[in-house]
Image (tube, rainbow, N blue to C red; front, side, top):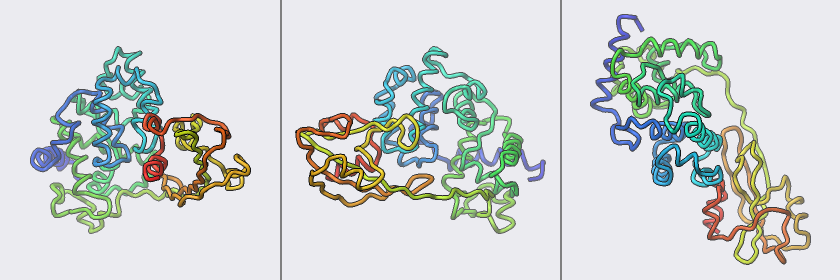
Length: 338
């Protein structure tokens, strides 16, 4: 983009956001950093429609950072269950505790200060600082990367950190002198509603005349990122044991997939699951196929009544108390439907 058009870009985004951007989301129209931070963490790799209910429930239960800090991690994970990417929930809890213990319940007022907190990276810190404190800093989340790489016809491969740094530099150059909060929201809105990944609606885009990718006729070529994740496949067996109205749960390790969540006892193969209760008749349930970021997970479930409460280890939980435990989404659905 020619330097003479940089000012036009910022002003155009701000004006478009005033007229056509989103203004009614529950985390908008506030300068409360707790509410903005909560929404930013939940919205990472998750769509707005999915986040809305979780956001309202979190605020109803924990209206301030100090309230969230006083909760246990198990309570936070239970409320988060089904939202995915559970490291966000663990970082959320750690961040709230840091705010309460190190900052007397108040979030730092600069992007640099916010980045010192657990789970807050450069883009999230900048979003909070721009929305809540008016700091003139650039964000670079997925939607904004897409908008800027298309407008700039940015040829660098974002798989490399040095190239991404160049995009950060360009994003900073494009910042307007005023209304940086409106500008930031405008970029987010444009990426979410107009400059979409697969079907950008260039006819409705306010910066179409400035867009290098559109002028070249290939907007979906950007952003360029050659490194692709290789998807794997995993297969495990769940043992669903019941005894006197209770279900046996085991807590997952503190690291790895579903870290800290509660699941049915899990085995690497069918033989291992059967060997845990030799001689007991096991009912085979339909298998579950669950897609995660890096792999597809096939989960087989075998159910039985445990004679005399015999178990391979774990905690008996009354069925009416299962909602108090952090269960992964496929297990919640399995229990609800069975």
